[in-house]
Image (cartoon, rainbow, N blue to C red; front, side, top):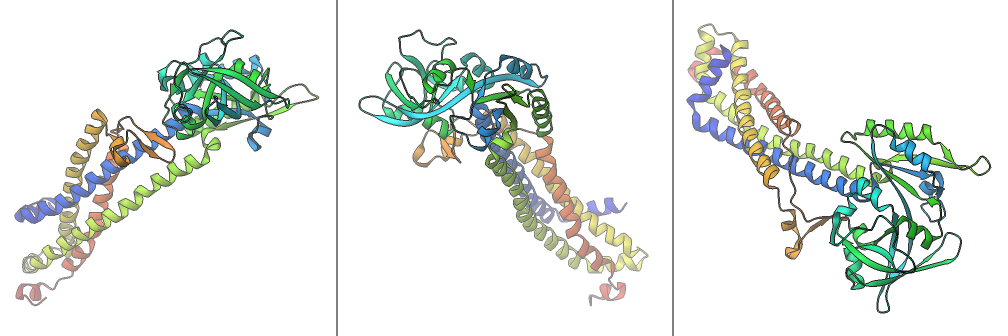
Length: 428
């Protein structure tokens, strides 16, 4: 009954009700859209970091975790690779070696990172092969000697060297045995991953070619692992524990190599910190926007209660309990908030649904009309597609309804405490 009366009271002043609900709807819809955009943005950043190079999990020698240098490698063990690959959640295992050196030709040279990969396994564990924009990915087998070794360059590194597919380069580096490593390379592909560090520094070689160049025959620096569709932190930690139990160390008893398995959060903690900090900032926006909306609700309900003091006095005089009057005023505040929240839900869902279908052109935010937008070292050139989820739609509606409840408390208490005679006489 009280809710019905409250709804009728709101309908008596339609314009004020619609204007208040409209302001709440705009605030709610904007929060829903902003939250969806931010979450999609963060997920794209994480996918770019994990998919291209890091993977969901990494296995290293313990010394390599403490100091990632050329000499801290571990012996390749096919049995270990198969053991890890047999774990249910693991979908791909990619062995890698890393080394730094100079890459160039007679006119130009640049420092670069040589990344030795198994081309076939890398297709399963990494998105890098899919990011080749010109030419092709590495062949599954090393190029026959004495011809040049195949190399896939990051497109920024290729631009700095002024080379393209088909050009030849020379690689110079320090070998693990102290020798000077050098080899002739032929560019077979250029990749654009959206990861600035990878595109600017990386030169991908076949694993055997890279190990020959770096004097790392039979050794690895890393096993990069990819997990199935469910890769939450609990799953990753469980898989890491299983791997650690299966291979605590490699090598013989006289020269053991302790091994460490880490999740992507451990490998790039700064990325995880950015994601968590960005997600927490949405609550600051909630606070600011809903504080403004709450002040609007409070002002509307206070003015409405003041205008109807005589009416409230008559209701109290004919026997309406003060508590019932308070509930009516409180219901009005909650109903107008809920109406605005539901309208905002419809607006936000429509906006998010549009971008979920057609995407958002993030590159348009680039300075001087560039082809991509770069943030924190990650380039966004493809449209950003939002996710339409209940977790992104419902919280703003719930929060604004609670805000409306609290904003209605003061007008409700003041109305319930009116003196009926003074209110009817217009002296309260």
